[in-house]
Length: 265
Image 1 (cartoon, rainbow, N blue to C red):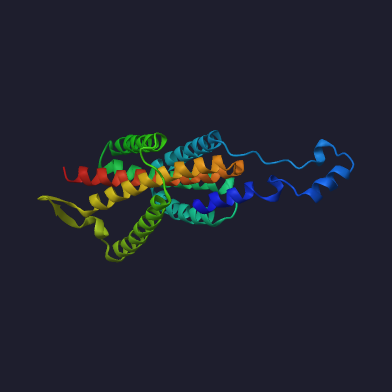
Image 2 (tube, rainbow, N blue to C red; image 1 turned 180 degrees about the horizontal axis):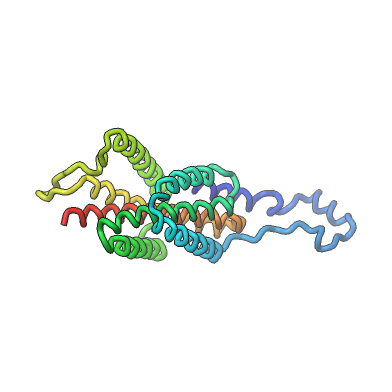
């Protein structure tokens, strides 16, 4: 996300948005008057409301997709794969794409709906608990950032970059191992902490929830930096994508923790 913010700042500071040199100004002064249609228009700068509105739109689309996935859970796996591909494309594009972000929210909704239906079949009521917990954590993270209880520094972002990268590598390796062995991978291993036996998955998902919460705080900071630097409004779609991705990750990890707890009852 930091790369996209930097690109937005560069766009905001490109020649079409900055002061012209004296020669160019003299040339324009000497030229005949032009009508309004001939004058270059500066793209509107990003505002917080833009990000809020785009995030709300994508959240609504995700809910529609989730309804489809809930009714047809078998669509969850292919939707997850498609969502992964779309996320990679969005992240590596130089310009934000409204269509890709909307498509991502739709397929991720199908994935969440499918996986939520399966979890709810095993543990009735767990989805409502996970949703409420996710919203509560998101609200706490916003409060921590809003009141500067947690400050986002360069060190904070560097730690987050390496920590999330390490978790992503672990998750990929564990997924391949689980598929190859037909087991749940490292998450199903039993550990004992202070005499209490529990699946290793609780500890792993607990760490993931912390990382997702930190990522959410970093997302808030990136939006604020972008607004302060007056990046073009079109980048609101990318910020909405980033927020949605973090919230989806947070929800999945909370869902996992609750399933481990419910499974041990």
